View 1: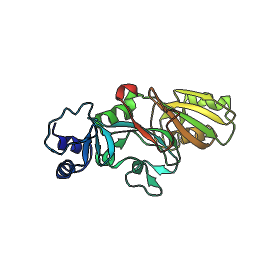
View 2: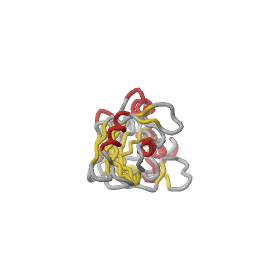
View 3: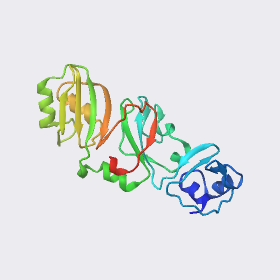
View 4: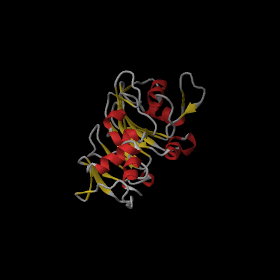
Length: 229
C-alpha cells in the first residue's frame, strides 16, 4: 500500500493532505524520514509517526476506554463534553463509534470500532453478549430484590419482562448485575422496579473482556481483535 494511502486509511486527513504530510517530511518510520507519498509498504505491523505522534497500523479500529463520569456517548452532546473528545483526532476522523452506550453518569468499560458488522455483532439482542455492572444502591439490597431481578421484572412503559443473567449482593447497598440486553436505562429501571434506586453505576466487563485495573478514567488502549471480547 502507498504510504500516503496508509495515512489516509488511519484517519490522518484527506488524500491530498496525507500526501503533503509525507512529502514535507512529517512521517517517520523507525526514526527515519520517509518523504515519498507513493512508497510501497506492507501495512500489517507497520509502526510510524506523524509529526512526532507514534501510530501503529490497524486495518479496523477496535479499542476500549475507561469512561469517566460526566461525558456523553454522543457526537453531539447536549449537556456535557463528548466521550469522543477523549480520543485522538485520527480515530475521530475514522468515525469510530461506541459499541452501545453508557449514560453520562455511568463509568467503566466502553468499546469503540469503525467496523459496522462488529457493532451489530455485539449489540444485537439475539447475541446475548453479557455485560457486568457494579451497582451502588440508595437502599440496602435484600435477598428478595436479588431474586426478583433473577426471575424477571416488568419495566414501566414496557410490556416485556427483563431479567438479569446473574445478580449478587456484594455489600449492604452494592450489587453485581449481569445483563444480556441493552434497553434504555435498563439497570436503573430494573432497580426501580424492585423498590430500590441506583446511586452509582460502573460497567466492569463486556463479554469476556474485563476493565483493566491499570486503565484510568479517560484513558483508552487498542484491542488486538474481537476474539478478546
